[in-house]
Image 1 (cartoon, rainbow, N blue to C red):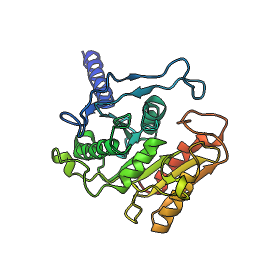
Image 2 (cartoon, one colour; image 1 turned 30 degrees about the vertical axis):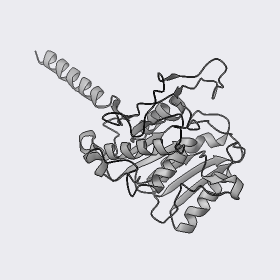
Image 3 (spheres, helix red, strand yellow; image 1 turned 90 degrees about the horizontal axis):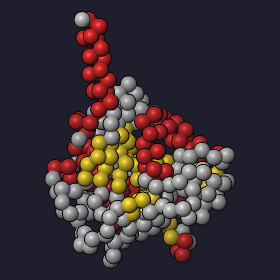
Image 4 (tube, helix red, strand yellow; image 1 turned 180 degrees about the vertical axis):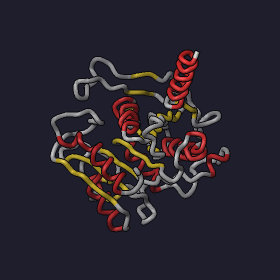
Length: 298
């Protein structure tokens, strides 16, 4: 009898743990997202046999996205530090590199005890709107929802950061800059939560500067001492231009924002976490060290 009871208790605990660490997806908006007027068609993986691979593996490229969501990937209970990172995949604001710069990143974060929230924001660019406007609304809304559910999800609302790639890194920079007020009409109590990230990680960022104006900081980015501590990583041979990181770093430094930058000679663009012979693919270790040194990852 004791063996039977012990067996079922073990099964119950195992199922509870599995449920506690299973991904949880939520729609960002209770109805139609703000400003949406046109039907976009069915969301799908747009990758085909002609699409380039990364480290020998295909990439899931989602588009169009008309119903944005957030998906929580909780860290294992025995590792959970309470830290949460909202992950913003890139894709030039046309698609989302969903696995390469989303779900694979969540797996890595979980492995170091960090809860991950993968943001599925609206793409492609909406007509008559700046490329970042609809995604910024989604990012602000998502940060509010994460903090509103912090107790329910066992998260620390004062240790919620963002990590983005390429266009997703630009989105994280815009969110870090524009968080004093919502860019949409308040929906509910979640929108009364702060949408300012506690820290920001930008991996091969795009659009941070304007090359035609001597790499001036992009006009949508307001640089001030209120920006969160920031981590930058990029390569010299990045076709998106390493100047994005260099001049952004200098602007943050001048404003007194704590900022760390790692530049590598080669590696190109769009490698995600997939390991190659290029040392730049060791950037996740540098980020983990930075999080520990900053006191977020305890």
